[in-house]
Length: 298
Image (tube, rainbow, N blue to C red):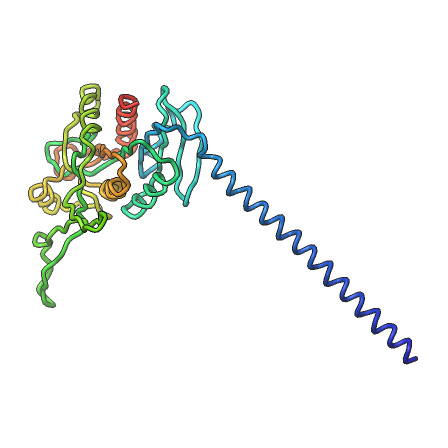
């Protein structure tokens, strides 16, 4: 009886050992398969940008309505997603383009621009899209070639005690600080590349939906609709329009030595006699004009 018990005991130990070894082999195989699959996905993403041309021009827009006109003109394009930002790679009339949907806001603009530069190494960046009017002489569908862009959301306020209210007109705009080598540089504005500005102005007469001017763009994560506030920006800081991406893109582009151009179209204005508000049409017109700039540069 004792020998039978010992036999059963040893048999169970051997069975258990074989079971554990089998499970271990299966786990290793599954782990190897998972690793191979992950490696294949990474390689596929890397291969997607292997054939990017050297003279690629990047055109950005934050919204679908600000990039859709380009996709309509592309005969064929690849949709690629990097760091959760979407890029469309293709050609229009022989001009190689990467269309970047940045999403709305300063952080999205900066992050997607960094990804754009790291992934595609574009020759230049055209940041374009819709804007609210600050200049009362600009109507909806007029275009601003932003020779300068500034961050209008960076300011200091003086101390006021409780109950003393707020005084927005006393807020002091602050420069953007950038470390360049061992030096800390201050930028009140970022300038668009002079050659790109010249090219854009060179085709201004071809634009049929309004006028094209040189001007200054203000950027911040704010949609201002208070007329006194808008007039203060225009009169004190010379802004012609406001939006939510241009200054962030310009800062990242400058930090990476990539030529940059700001192009913005008025889609609505609180300070002109034009009460039209048409984001979709404005978005199409601005992208179409930006594509013509890219063709001239190709």
